[in-house]
Image 1 (cartoon, helix red, strand yellow):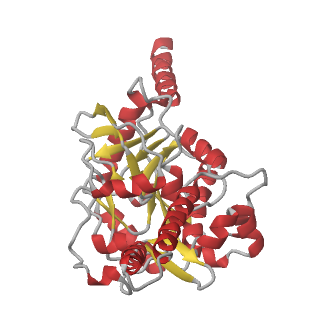
Image 2: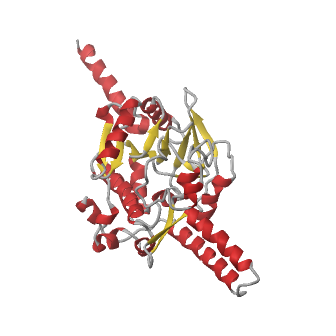
Image 3: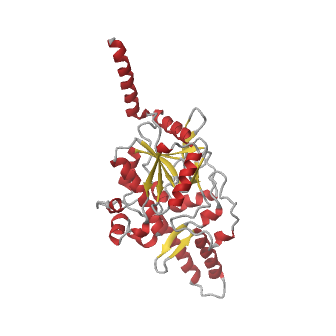
Length: 360
């Protein structure tokens, strides 16, 4: 009789012990960042998730931060001076939305690992099963179980597991923060976990509570594009999966201030892709904002920057213009490159950065 009672208790205690040590097999909760005003995007994303087999009980909506609603005091407390001048409101709001999620994860005693998605994401079939398999593998692997911070489920940039390079390295060279790529482990269903050279994109990732604390400590203030900043943090134990499980939907208008129809990107066929692996279209990439020009309240996108760089060089090389124009143009291009590199560095503050948390 005593044995019959004690045996289940012993087995239960063992299961709890394995879970607490990082070997948890509990389902990974799925969180989605979505602005309160974007009900249509929430409906589209929730439909996408359920159509790919994600149970509604595992989905949690996180109210995102709308950058244009932030007061000057809130901006001063939550963004660097450069960000307040050169970032679009959408860039700042996106950064603070992710920071809000990390903060809530740490403060509210949530599950040790949480998946976070943006509301323009497209998922693979069997998404939940694959996420749980990958997280379980990280939690069981001796190398990673007590140290992994982030598992990126979908990214672009220098993320190919075989180290394929080329034009996808352009962003990595511009902002720095590269890693030495290597393969770490393969799951029983042939999902590969590897260290990427330099990823971009925050449309889908899993973060451990340890990783959330580290991100909060290293990147307290919005300083630039959130992916450029956080995926370049050197001591963040960062991994990617292959094949990728999520991609951004290039047909949905970006909320960070991107352009899709008023520059060079409008001339590019919608089906052209930067590379097949990430699935990012050339039109989407060219329309992404680099900086906001404050005096004009004008957004310098990648396509506009390329256009101005080429046209400026051609004009500067013309024998009909003053000789100082080419060095002046090159100085402008170099200054922009330096500015982008600085805005990709993580920034912390001694202030209590809770204004956005209270207002949203």
